[in-house]
Image (cartoon, rainbow, N blue to C red; front, side, top):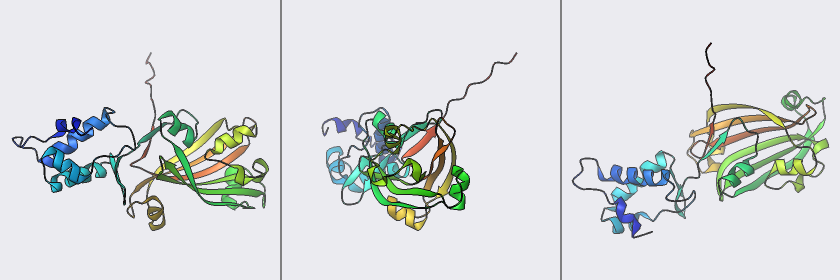
Length: 248
């Protein structure tokens, strides 16, 4: 990899600032798949030594790519290619499934698994009667061990007798019980990270996030899941395909 990096050496004769040249060269290579998601870049010191540039130039190039969401700094570890995830809106799939299809490893850091009575909001969203028991799951979702989302899920307790049996994939658990979700309604909006959310996801307060509310349904029409997810917008996005209707 070190020898290959010579192709990223900025041209001093170019009027474009050296750090922007380096950032653009790295960005283009990342976009073409030269490195895999979550691969580490050489340190600023290594880049400056291999490319004959100052550490300030290397740092500014990396900072620029971090601002663009292409790279991610991990405290005490290094700088990594951001595993950007784009989930099609037309397909119902789990977080774990989407990551697996992209060669990334999904994980969970559990914050809470508890059973209680449904709140008015949960009753309305899930079509429950007053005081019906529900299971609430709260966890951090990780992609190759990097926290990319905060997730809270509410499931009617009748569908989840043992919350501790849920692994990294809630949908795998439901599938295993013979109650797979077949459709879902999702509401997506942009929000700013609260101080608490910023601490959990290693972001700056007020950084951009995607807040996604999902209600999933069984084939019978009964609601089985209410999930609120707060995704780091530099890691996660949604894509949709539109077709123009032919005019007659």
